[in-house]
Image (cartoon, rainbow, N blue to C red):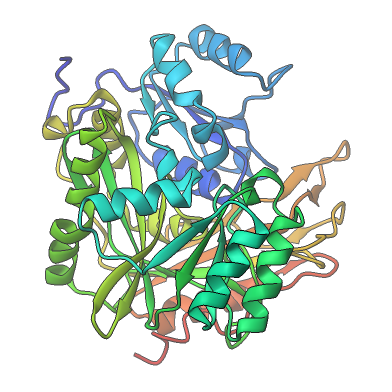
Length: 437
């Protein structure tokens, strides 16, 4: 096994490729760019804000097929590939890149089932005594409606496959559960809804924890909390996420250590039992119920927008740690440090998001990223006149750090006013759980 120098771990790490185009990938690129040893960071395909950061450029290939990207990695002598989104992970891009001799941070197709199939993930939890809500699987509308009729109570309805974070309906009534079942099997989520999970409804605050894994060992990042609903007061439809903050104050370091033993280590061991060498992020979405924490979902990558809130808290060793994970040698990585600041993230979305976001509007941005304030692009592109244009539902994340959450959110919201585009929408209550603390 290749050893990495524990002093900095970067002797071989000069060029990085990040796969993806969202705010998550933009924030990762920014975090890695702060390391002086890294020469170049390519983002494929990137977005309208990629080149705003030092050493970061978009890699625009003639084709986005796997063979072309692998060929470009070899031509550019890429030392580390980081795959951001869940879809290419679920399709096995990491496997194909490893087969081609590349060093990759991100799980293979089998490991990505942790997110790509909620039923598969639920089975893994039950097999390894990981606490989660009771659930039932159904492969047809009729089967699902029979389950609902039998239990005669509102259930959470989840499309089994990948649905861009929008495949879960938390129902307040039996009628809502019935409607959600019909909607999924009517094709709302395409093939992701060929099978559904019906889950008992549990109550409590939610928190996200992240582990960086090398297949054998893991380290935990600070916890975060996101806001899924579109509107203030946690109202409106589910989205990919309208904002986040870190560290979440719902759990302390002892709680994190307990959750490592209760959830993360059993998950990694369970994957190993299936002969899966899991290299990448294990994201556990938890609900802190009156009977203890329960896993409500697993993701196989960094959360978005939690990643945007977390990246400014990472120490400069972050690049070394990802590289060590990708090499299967986490024990040789330097200790990852975290800033003690509070970090706040607010998402600015397009009109019509999440159902039918408006695109093609010019964006005016009158702020620049610095050590305490960042603008991370997501659904943006650059037109022929060099204008930044909206190209997706979640357009930008404004992220700020402070000694307190009040300070961080005040800085983020005051600078959000300096960004304008037609139909711009954002929540005004992100972080309500921790503001004024």
